[in-house]
Image 1 (spheres, each protein chain N blue to C red):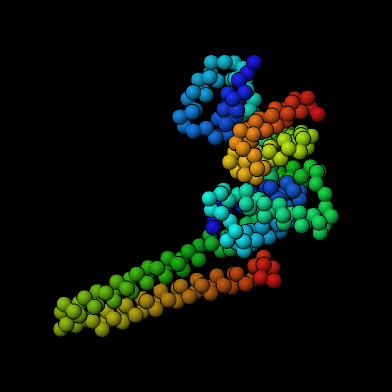
Image 2: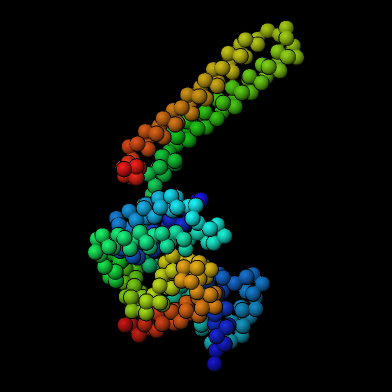
Length: 146
Length: 158
């Protein structure tokens, strides 16, 4: 006569539903009794057979190909790099001006900072516009809006 | 509310109900949209998947009412060919899957439901308990006897 509570524990072991401290006890009982070993094997086999039943994959979201596109990543990275550099140059220029007001080259730094921040703005703008364009051309998106 | 981790499970559940890829995709989209609309009704103390599945089932029921479709035949997913297997292996796997799905069809509705929840939708015991409104002990017992019944049907080759 098999112990029903132990059978349920063996099943929970197969389903990864046992807590870590319960596992050694159940494994010891399985090892010590061929009937429970057989039960464990049968449950594992059934689980494995059912796991092989094929199902179609869910549809990929419309934005997924865009998210993984390399051009999009390049625009984001360039936007971030130029933005950080631009801010760095502006901060350096401010520090330089406050510490050594007489130093020449402040205007050049200011210009460089503006250019870098401008580039960053255009990279981010390009990314946002492209995203919007991808969004509006998506059939699923239009269907949801409708 | 991040629903992405639940999409594959929900899609399988919807696919098992409608047994058609296009309808399952449409229902999935409707369910996700409804989940975002009704997110204020979700109790974060409870597991998310049972709530999502309830939404999906209600939407699928409406779909059935509209289409006057029916449940119960063998899913056409069995025709899907794995790119990793050669044609002979695919054929064997299809045969095996068909045999398994037929065995599941022969289970009692209660047992079929719990097997689908556990094996195809990968629900935890807690999630199954919430979905079927059963205490944990009953979940374990019903699942165990469902597996036993399935094993028996498979070994008899019914």
